[in-house]
Image (cartoon, rainbow, N blue to C red; front, side, top):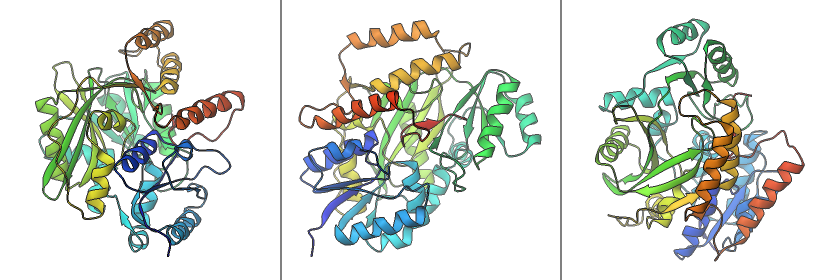
Amino acid sequence: MPEQLAALVLDGNLRAAVVAVRCLARSGRSVGVLDSRPGRPFVGAASRYPVVRGGLPDLEADEAEHVRALLDLLDAHPAEMLLPVGDGSVAVMRRYRDTLASRTALALGSEEALAVATDKHATLAAARNAGLAVPLSRTVSTEADLEDAIRSIALPAVVKPATSWPASGAHTGRLTCIPARDAGELRTAVRSVLAKGTAALVQQWVTGRREAVHVFHARGRLWAAVCVVTHRTASVVSGNSTDRVTVPLPPDSAAAATRLVEHLGLEGYAEVEFRRDHDGRPLLMEVNPRLSASVEAATRAGVPFPVLQHQWATGASLQAHEGYRTGVRLRWLGGELRWVRDTTRARGCPGVPTPLRAVGTVVAATVRPAAYDYLDLRDPWPAVRAVGNLLTRRKTPDTTPDRDEEVVGT
């Protein structure tokens, strides 16, 4: 009988997966890491910590085959917990929940809570019911809805997919937000999202401070909360954070985040994202019910969210974390380059600098002390592989984006 692992971490090329592998292993837990990038090296496999490293069939090409291979791996390497990191893995695990749960504990909230948390329209409706402030939005499913949205929402606006990973499978990669400066761009963006198999949200453009409140709620109480302020993201309107720092918990957004996960009945880790409006109110943007790209800032600040996920999923005792270090700053250099590139696409939108000023911002930020994603002197090889993958993509264009690279309406 093979020795049981504490956890199998999926989506091993994502930054959050590398964080989870390191955090779990350093807590004394045996861990394996898997990814579904056929024929391409993934970053998590370069870590010194996994005792199992493996590949799975592409979940977008054939999710049934992907699940069969995952079950075979669980037979060969039993694990106490299966930890998804990417939206695609969460979606597949939800569809095959009963089958997978018969082999291992799943680090997933209830289906009822996830059905709301992974649908931005449903999330905003639930947030309003819970008394949270939300941005002005219109959901678009038809051409008639589109024209109503153009009349109702001031331009420029932001177009969001209602679901980042539609069940139709009619796309490649994770869908994200699209800036729209005028009615023509808005029509094009909405139709692009609709073609991917999900409704679109047309939302007011909010330019205030971005706050992500990382919470862990389970068994009727809050066990940990960390606030991370994001200065820049890979896309000018949203996307993975590229420069962020831990700050003291703001009373209003922290209370709102807690109230929302309690209202949803969402257990386990969640990242609740807000953006401040011109009056300083935190407006809910979305909820991520899986380890997010910015979770490393929280773990470096002293809150081991992946360990909490393992304790919760396996039914072990949970340890509360009452405080954390503030001023912990992290940057993602690959994402900074994407942000600079994206400023050319959204030129003229509120809060978007010129490309030259964007370059200056990134260079100036390099002078300030910060840690960097993937880079860890105790585990250096993931950073080396991440740089190698980045250089390889620059030399050899690939039509298939990485799992952590969002498809922006194209």
